[in-house]
Length: 244
Length: 274
Image (tube, rainbow over all chains, first blue to last red; front, side, top):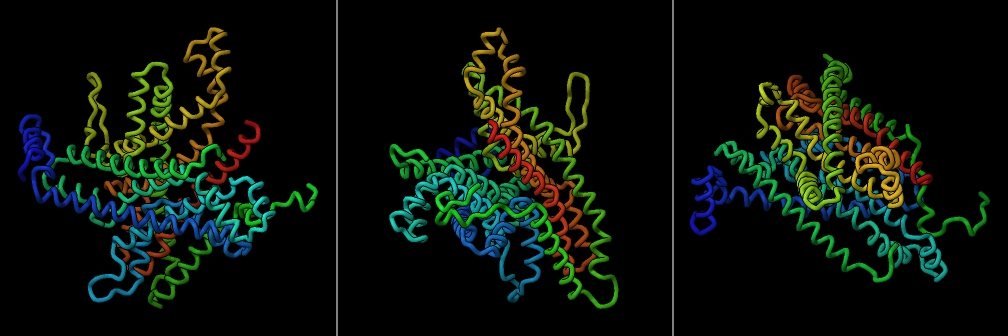
């Protein structure tokens, strides 16, 4: 690789023996970039799906059907109280082996199972977060909405959802940060995300220490971006003079 | 309470009911497991060992592996709590430098993925520690314990900081007025009040850690997950995968769910009084 960046890292290698191969070797650089893309894609897909699951779950909890409530409670507790890695293994190996495969490629590959597993996991937390957000809206507001003749759906749409969202945003941010960190587990089933790419490089080039530093910096940067976006959103949604 | 219509909650909030009774969910989980056994039986060969017998044969080994997970979680929690407490004190230090150092360490270890930190500890810690003339061997399980205790320490530090700072200022100044030193103030005045605020999140952290201990199977230490996978591989009966994995999930669930319930109960109790 050419350019001032590559030169700098070559100098770092010569001078201090720190070999950051992704910056000097084009092949390793591509591997890390591919890993980064996979991690970002996996994270964004899981964030979207888990928020959807959380909304559906919180809505089901608020219906009057006992069955729907029981199913959601079981789902939430089952995923919250078992190890994420075992959940992933359960989906990938146990459920994956049950599905028919078309020719040589399985119906759902490792990436697909990672999406399903992590979305369900983060979704279980989101259900609780959204539910507590809606519950934290003062009862007064709901009564006022009822007094103004809002229907159930309208109360949700115009009162509970907008206020509940503002209340639960910090908790949601926290959970999404955890979700991004959890995507590293996909390493265990061979999804070529960041940790996997780094692992391939360090087992070939033997620069474990350097790759570790790189990994930590990249993950902290990814999380910093996520937190920054969420905080901006929080500020944009803030209602001046209203603190729930 | 009188059931005047005015007092009844109205609208969508009325739908939320109290959580199911404690045994209902574990019972549902156990039913799930039994159903998977029955399903595996229908897939098994009619002659030879039944699915239930095979699972029963492996159960003690898997349970032993699970106990190792629990042991690792207890050790990591002990180390993490001690480190985290010190880090938490750094976070509320009166001078800038220790506070900055504590903040950087906390942010770093809180925001790095657990698995990456575990790899970090496994690869970068030496296999022997030299303390003076003493040589302490550091087997891989000890490195794993240290690796898991790093994120625990960072998370606990935040809990400690929050709990200590939540104690009202007059308590601090009263202790200073009675000529307590800073550490004495914390130990004799603040901590006894702050412990009850730390306890629920600390228990929550422990449950998270227990579930994270399965990560050690990724870095090549034999735990419950490793043994489950080995059992499936050695029997070559793919239909057993479902019940065996569910058995392991059930073990963790039975261990972690009561902790989660107790955490909630404690939170509620302290909320009323605190």
